[in-house]
Amino acid sequence: MNNTQKLTSREIIEKLKPKDICYTDIAAALEVSPGHVSRIANGEAKSRRVAQAICSALEMPLDQVFGGMYEPKNRNRDARKTQIVLALRKGSPIPPPRTIA
Image 1 (cartoon, rainbow, N blue to C red):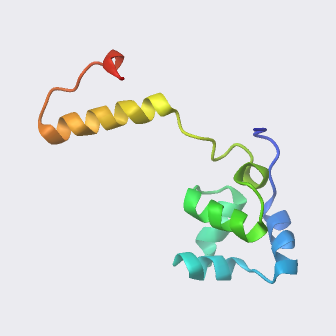
Image 2: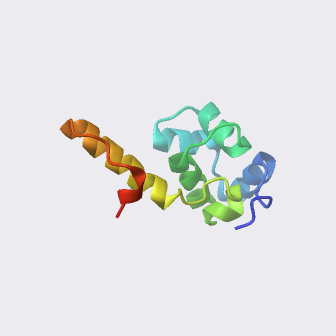
């Protein structure tokens, strides 16, 4: 993925126009404010759910619309976080990071 190639908010709006789709439509579907959708499109905030909805409306993949902004998370970090959460919930000691399976 190329982090520098992404659509601007203006480009997103222009690509939605022929489909007769507005930010307010996306906002209503997701039960969020149109301003929130606009902030996601502008890159001022992050929400994978809203970004995915914008991409669905555009019929384009996430990386073509938002560049690398929503690249997959670090899987090792996800495993470590799960390990910590489970230990804390059980009241167990948190194992050292090297024991991630």
